[in-house]
Image (cartoon, rainbow over all chains, first blue to last red; front, top):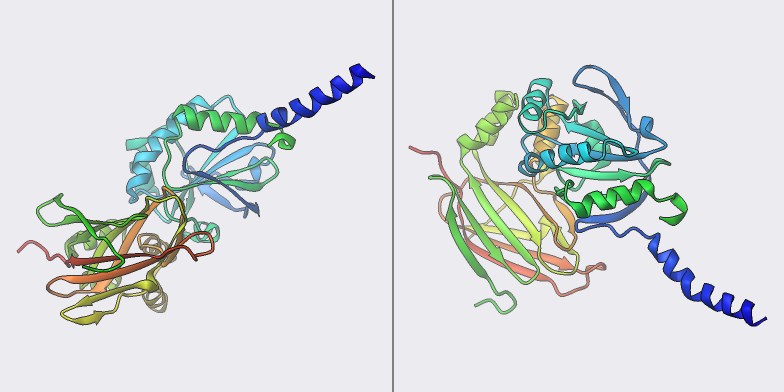
Length: 178
Length: 178
């Protein structure tokens, strides 16, 4: 009886601590943004291959809208490329979407700042319009079930430990503990 | 001296021979203004393939790139309807983004150009989260001499916090080099 009581008490005190360790605290500039199902789209990349957001179902998707004329995009893209290299063995799909620019502009820009990256092309801007970002650049994190979960406010240093740690925690934390 | 507003002119920093950055700061909001010359704006849009039919009417206007930063701990609500401009003692009506987007649509301009144009403008409304910084262009009729701006922002999640009021007396439309 005494043993059961001790066990019960210790469970009562340790459970909240255990549950809390499952929570993932987003770093600066990332906010919880649980708006529901992510609007799907299908677009071509620079090589003419088609891809959709829903093709990433089953893993987290790092969805990033950008344009070459946007100053913060120029600064952020190399950090995304470094993050992509550091996360390449992790279950995270990085999906870039360029807003309303042509192949030449995109090719020239990425070649200069992030040559390893490829992007989907929202040629007429209609997909970006559906997502209605706060501005460009814009990043959303979509969970493996296709639900939007987080939103980045402006450009972020994704290759820094605070952000890498957050992304790694996300992709390795079971849905029930998030 | 305005009763509510404490206006702090941070400085005028010449970035080029033509344009300058002006900044105004109140407790929770920092505004930065960078007036653009007509040639700068035309070059920007020409480089993105905009047709003359779009560039000509834009060339005649006054473009000012604005960056709004929430430096406080509360949500700050941007609503451009609460910004008033005056020049030469008379109200100066800012062009709403819809004025242009409807014009481009009537003219049959390509969706990609309309999209790019839209994303280069400052949002009409936005809930700036603490630390967030977003920017874009505002478009005014071109005038000579100083332009006065009175900008008000609601604060707090329910918009019922103390409003932020900023006045800026020395905005200017800049001209091309002779």
